[in-house]
Length: 145
Image (cartoon, rainbow, N blue to C red; front, side):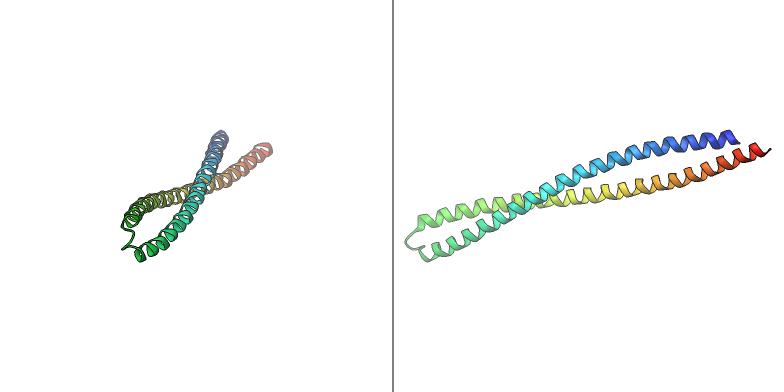
């Protein structure tokens, strides 16, 4: 029975080591994913600000062009082309925003997985302590007898 407890303790130690390595790997991956997500978010925020500035500038120019439309038909055509390009940029921005949401979801899932592994590791540590106590008690009993 002592050998069984000893083997179980050794098995728990091996499992604990594996889980610690896996938890470290997950932590590193989580950090990498988080940094990528934060970089993507920063880039998206910059792009949104730029698009908003461009949109505001285009709106002001559109207002002016409408006032001069009778005299400047050619300028009105250029404005329409600029608006088409802006719509393409908005579509691109929408796609980027969706990618950011996917990254946020992935990050949250990775954090949940990390938490699960950390709980498993804590449970194994408790079990390890219990087995160590049992082992010590069995050794005391063996010495006494």
